[in-house]
Length: 231
Image 1 (cartoon, rainbow, N blue to C red):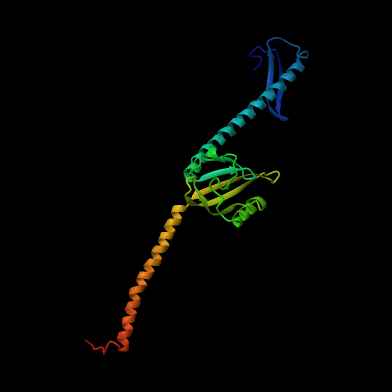
Image 2: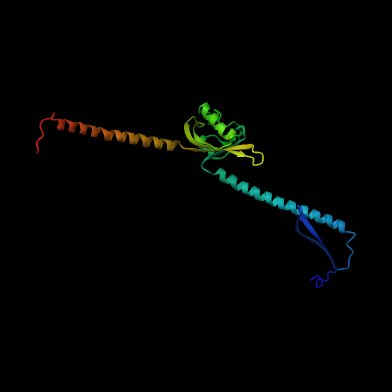
């Protein structure tokens, strides 16, 4: 093959990335050539090329991660549930668009504020509720689930289904952040209450005529209303 190209002399140097072979760097000449004077330069060039390829690969991987993060961000921004991310101390560092729909607060109004504070949408539950919540997520490092009564920016009260998950560093075991997900279940609670009240009222209304019928039957059977004839 080389003879067909009239190549008289060639040097092939391996290219390594992180001590793993990646490819070859070749130098060719159409004349007989002594490469000894430039072999050191060629080795340096091979290493530089390996470093450049590694950096290029790293940039490609970084770009892939950026695209994935952008996709995740777009997905979180458009979900129906309210999502808030805080520091381990409970300082808000992110809130999606659903926050404004649920609470009336814009995301930029709550960033760097303490979650659950009375000037935002929380702080209405008793101390035992919050103590149990913080113990679950910060001490036990487990997911907390429950229902919470909150207050909108307008002052209107609402009920949410709440889930708070600690984000734990896989190397150190330390908590890096908390992810809070809330879903407004006020209407669901109102529907459940209406159902319960309807069943209670219907049961009462059904029992009332049955009680009257039973009383009349007792009177007739006892003879207090006179003797019953067959006709």
